[in-house]
Image 1 (tube, rainbow, N blue to C red):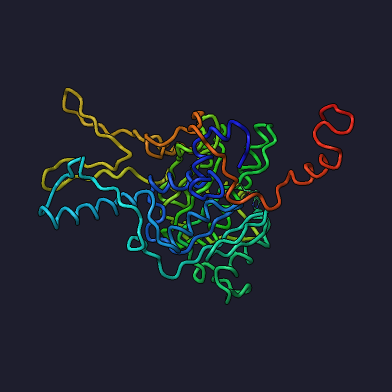
Image 2: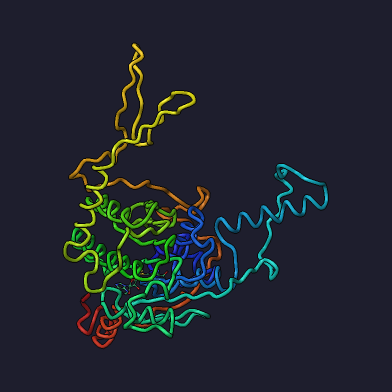
Length: 398
Ligand code: SAM
């Protein structure tokens, strides 16, 4: 977390320290969960690019401690309120506003889940978190896959072909970001490589029906990426949490219901994003769509024509009925783009991450919850110190 005066006036930066999160990114995951109910029925999770560990903290508090945030918290409050009202007044439909009780999480509200397994990976060391296995590794390196599989299942046999059956994971999240160079195209390219590495790992461990959430930078060809993800997941959304600055190209893809294509198996020898495997799969998919005949069915009882959703039926003034394509995904053979639904998430009353908030009177700046363990700028700071500070021994700024 930064320490500039802009950071101090950033509400999420301050809130993170007040609430004990290691980074303000925690709010991004919480707001994504508010929208997509990410943690519903989830017990096995892999957190990629996890340092300093605020996303892992969220996982730990939701899954291991059993705290409720996001949608689950609203549902919980609602249920509790109804229960209280039922006892006192009998069934009620709507709560009178002044009687809505804010329920603080108490020990009774905590519902720890059983058989939770969380593995967090980063290039940087992650300070320990209760119940979480942390690994220091590069997610773009093939050796990280067996490391991860071993952490998920200590009995893992590297020679076994049937890897996925042994390591079903419900959710893979990745907040990976390279050190930004400021060269826009280069940053987007490096980010996309991290994303493919995360996707490859996800494909090796996700169970059918699983979810994948990852940070992306929205560049000009991002809709090709959405189309590629659609090969593996039934639903692909792009989401921008309110705590992610509107001025940043950052967004998150939220992929739900993992449905690997028939015969697909994740391969370390042929990772996606390298070579032509993904391009070939895209082509196969396009061909399959082109061959699909429009499904137009006549209802035998009403004689009405029912069309598949990709087609519309138009009847002109003379009563002549025509069936036409209307979907953006109409089978254009060379069209490899797909526009994913874009969702802004986080309650509208939540803080605006682009605004600078006035500091409350008597504000005391708290120390970060977890100072960086091995920041990339550590060496530069040491060198500057040795040289006698920013102005050095000569008195001019270095
Ligand atoms: N989600 C984290 C949290 O909530 O604390 C913040 C993640 S931070 C924005 C991005 C992380 O990506 C950095 O810690 C960086 O070390 C990590 N990273 C970048 N490239 C990586 C790679 N190839 N393998 C593993 N981690 C990587």
